[in-house]
Length: 195
Image (cartoon, rainbow, N blue to C red):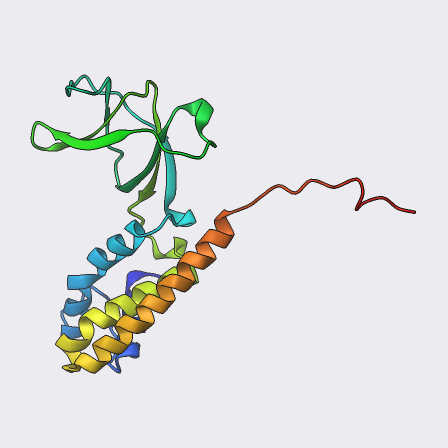
């Protein structure tokens, strides 16, 4: 599913016509363009979505910020840092201290005391084919809530879509948590004994 498909879902929710492309110059496409990327990034940032989770060894920079031993480059296409860790502690629960800052007024950096640091983060995923159906539903209702008043003049339609978005987001987060939580189960000798 691409951005145009998601826009068409949002338009259908509020009783508006379809668009052939999000890039066309119709009022519907213009309103979708105004909100789509912002809402996509916002929803991606709200949760640790499996399809958007990335892991990277951070690139050490030759910068100094008082109070921190190491300064690393902020990963490209990163929306939210979820965890900074050493390779050996990747699966441990907990989060090391870090601070997001800028150097030279333009370069976003990660400050930490971890040498050879790794990061897990939520990436700015633009490819709708990677989104789950639950995420698409939440995004399309969020978009519908934002374009309802400009296109239909109906605050009640916007309010309904906002409520539906919240429920869809809850469902999407629950589905994501289930999909991303896998515990290894080991056979128990008493339950597996055969008589």
